[in-house]
Length: 201
Ligand SMILES: CC(C)(COP(=O)(O)OP(=O)(O)OC[C@H]1O[C@@H](n2cnc3c(N)ncnc32)[C@H](O)[C@@H]1O)[C@@H](O)C(=O)NCCC(=O)NCCS
Ligand SMILES: Nc1ncnc2c1ncn2[C@@H]1O[C@H](COP(=O)(O)OP(=O)(O)OP(=O)(O)O)[C@@H](O)[C@H]1O
Image (cartoon, rainbow, N blue to C red; front, side, top):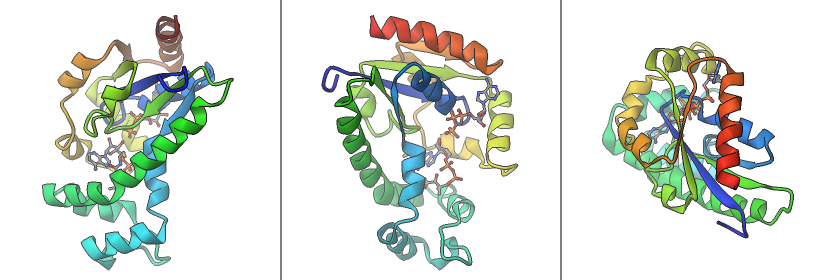
């Protein structure tokens, strides 16, 4: 709890529907903090660009001098040391911003709870700070198809990335609630409504 607001953490595989579930919690009056979005914004800052250039070279930038996420992803996820290096550059900054946002949102009277949509929530140890953990479950084939679409037809090689994440079994085990997201969004919305009622009461 922060300022009387419960903290809800979302867990799940790449493309399982974490952000969609978070948005549905948002529709019920929760404040949603999206770490992927914060991490992407960090890539636009000069400070981070300089650190990334020093670590990964200038091949990760496009013609406009912006970070090309595909090139960076291709470089990083083939090498555990590089994953560690990018995490060391991005994670402290992202978590500091998450902290600021939790403090800010928790002071708002209309906010009913705070939802952390942080793909690496358990990996950075922040699951400990949550009052409730919600795992979004989705079959692998459906996840891959949806992820492919979301990245504009680009294959982000989810399997490779998941090697650097805590296993789904472990995440499901630490969760207080499981949402199944194999069908339409309205079915997920019904489950979110039920789970949120359970959490808040
Ligand atoms: C390497 C980058 C540029 C690739 O960008 P891309 O557009 O291809 O992927 P996107 O950012 O949308 O991430 C999609 C998913 O990949 C997985 N993923 C991303 N970074 C990591 C990581 N460091 N370790 C394990 N999985 C990761 C997450 O499940 C994430 O939801 C980007 O993922 C990045 O900057 N990663 C480092 C920061 C980070 O850890 N972000 C995740 C949450 S803080
Ligand atoms: N029930 C559903 N029906 C159809 N499309 C869905 C459903 N749930 C999610 N999607 C779509 O699938 C894609 C992946 O969902 P979402 O971004 O919520 O997953 P995520 O777990 O947050 O992914 P990531 O790990 O990449 O951050 C999105 O384009 C989303 O709109």
